[in-house]
Length: 313
Length: 235
Image (tube, rainbow over all chains, first blue to last red; front, side, top):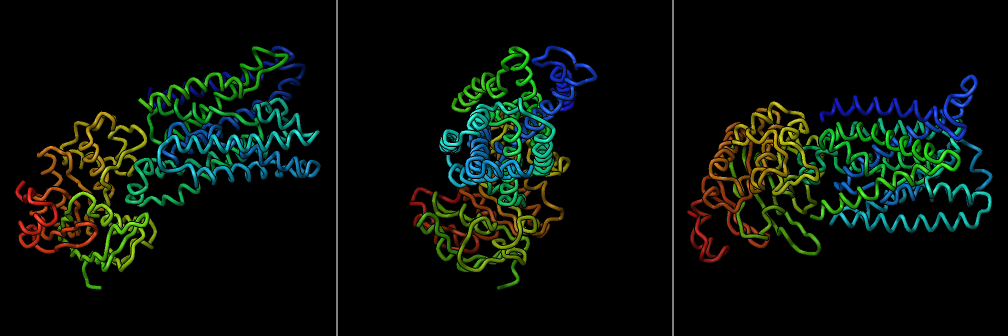
């Protein structure tokens, strides 16, 4: 399939999904009297679109930086770091956390950047498994930290537990959504110009620098923006793995590995996957929706094993 | 420092506590071709990386008027071309993608033809042999240069694992750049190719053993000392 065909089909699928997601809910089909249900569902759909877009492009960028198709901010501890940042804020300042719209995203960004930096310091270079093992360690640490804080903070306990299960889309409102969604979009747009550097860096640091690529600067930008995308997405949906793995993998299969194509297509596919997963979770069990994270894990986990096995062989 | 395009004085490099390059000096004028030879582990690749400004090193270094260790990557790439020994991409690009990546698809296609690799343009990198992949990367390196290029050309084993026809095409390309005024420094195991260069630098265990014209550097005595008795420049 050419990139143009993939874009056309992707846009049609996304548009259909948006209409389906806006029409479907616990209250049944339709948009309600005077579009009341439509107004209620729109923030959730917008949140899923923005977070999916950020997850997809963030995964593609992280895979490009680490030259590793198994990298995914959900698996390498970056989302875990974002949630841990939110947990620390809610644990230390439970009342102040909601006073400003940017407090929660800033805490998430701090946590995501912290784990991204540790990942870059200890996980890059060497074998591909080193990255994943470092990410595994970071994930375990941040998950434990989040659970410890959740267990000690009565009010935030349910909130943080839902975040750990990627189940925050249900509480999306316009007030909670607009800033993280804007940050998701900004991170995605700022990642696009790094496409050529990521292509050059795929040949190794020496080769890339030989072609005049500012490897250190590009890597720093990509890590920062991936952390920003992960943090903003976490604020919207909680912790979701596998979208950042699935979307770039599909994008490369459909349009080839050049990052000029992979980055935007991963964003589109990420939005489709997350909105699709949320819609499936709501559509199949309207009264007790399954979280988007659970649905993506059902599809993503086998794919992860398949890619890992392919690489090994 | 002299007026030469490449000037290195007393280069020293230590990696992981081991002295890889020890007090090596060299200079290259415009249009000159220099072969850097030596056994495995002699420091050829490390010396080329140092000349390209990719490694921190002791000593004085000037390439086309700049110290490549301190200038920005973009300016550096305008003054020197560097082709690594085994550049392997993490992604399975089509060969023709490489031209788009360096922003010169037409120039890349042209160089691919000149290196007798035009037939591979639509193939994936994984479908190419190691030598063919290296050839495609050389085409990428050459296509990225503004013509006429008269900077430093640093090539690490450019013709290794290529068949004879493509090896000759690579040599012609090097001669083309040398005639345009570039100073070409080539790390190679191929002593018959080294004999065709203006100057040969023989390295062993990071030290300069000999430097000068091929007739004075690739002597049976030096070859025997550095490689052992079995090696011969006519192989």
